[in-house]
Image 1: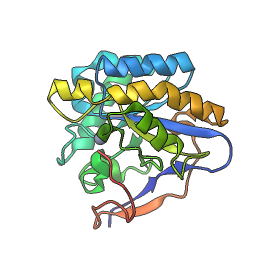
Image 2: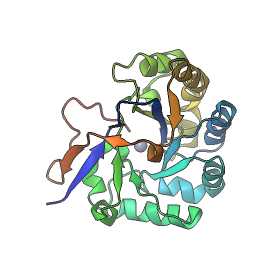
Image 3: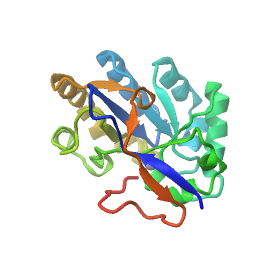
Image 4: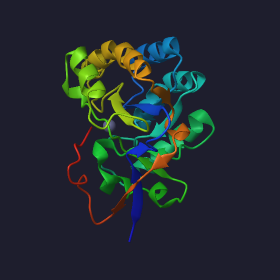
Length: 227
Ligand SMILES: [Zn+2]
């Protein structure tokens, strides 16, 4: 039976948290986020969609140049056999190395299991313990509040934000991340004020995974699914 370990956070000691961004690249919104991260001197993880990485390869190269980690969020951002394999090929072509960090779009692990990469022992599946559903929010301060007042926020937290969208409608892709961009400088500053330091997912010591099998495709109980 297919199974995988899903990591929602790292060790709860130390001072590292991971900012993660899904559904990009999405220029120029991705570049605006990269500029904020550079100003703050922090590194993050971008779980990119393969179809967007193919369309916007320069944005992926800017992520890499900024020292950020590229994760695999699937290719089409829809349920499709081999979708994560296709995205892995695009990422490997652009960056020279495959990503062994995966985040299932919509946390749909059934779709992830339809790709061969799910059976590689080196693959790491990354969920999040701080999930503000930023794509549903239009007020930046509400996103800040949902992150900073989240009961699970602390050392080891993985924070799920979005720099893009699965939508082929460019107006949706360009408008949806705006509140997140407005919130991001405040989020980083307040994490730092709490003594938390932003790191890439591969710089966290991942801990306490949830075991998941291919017979169960819904989100774990109590888990707020994300897109
Ligand atoms: Zn997604």
